[in-house]
Amino acid sequence: MEKIKNFFKNFNLYDMIFLPIALVSVLTVSIVFKSDALSIAYSFIAILSVFFLSKGYIFAPIFLICQYLLYCTQSFLQGVWGEFFLNLAILTPLQIATFIINIINKKKNKITSQEMKVNSIKWKEWLCIICAFGALWAGVYFALRALNTIALVPCTFSFTFAILANYLTLRGNKFQFIAFMATSICGCFIWLTPLFQGTANATDFIIIAVTFVLMFANNIYGIINWNRMYKEQKGKENFILKEKTEEI
Image (cartoon, rainbow, N blue to C red; front, side, top):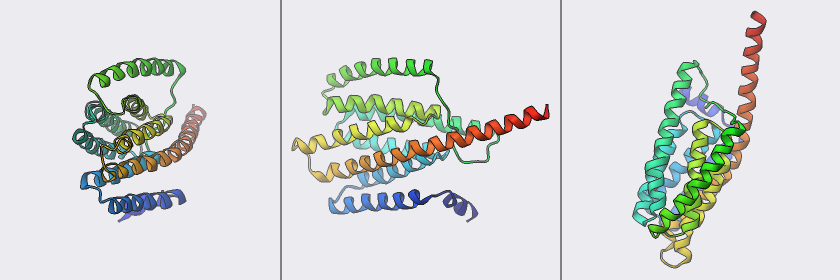
């Protein structure tokens, strides 16, 4: 009971408003459009994972892993091969690695807080990231085109931005949320394209598109909150360093 109290103790006004509204919205849309159980499960897990990640909770990668595996299943059933391979072969392993690294860092540094460590990235690494992003985009585009993937361009951007976002999560960088925002926009196009083309009905795709919109909104909060976390963690580090210097 004490752990539950401490968990909700960290909730601010935004948290108490966003989470219930997001979950109720997903439930309402699923009832109205009679969505299938898989889509509903994915949407609920996705909302929780992006919310916990924006809060910086150390267990957030576990929810992301569940989200990616459910998304894998949905992509496989709809024949969206780019999204299927991306989530199964790349994003899930990245989040497994993220969780392991966070646990190791927590034990190594004897951290009592449940917050993930926020890191900055130097310009040399950013340069490597940008070059890798361009090369990856070109490779993914031609690979997905060979597979006759629907919504080719959005799928390509979704693929590359998702890898970038998850890499930045692994590195503990706040700009992961900008990449996640781009991924959410691409996701909306991907899942609404069959609807606009008349090859699918709304019940299959609307709930996932709504989920991406809600995720986009929460990612804005994520970058704001992680910026706050970075300043607080940096302040604590400087305070500890100052104390050690004075002792010497």
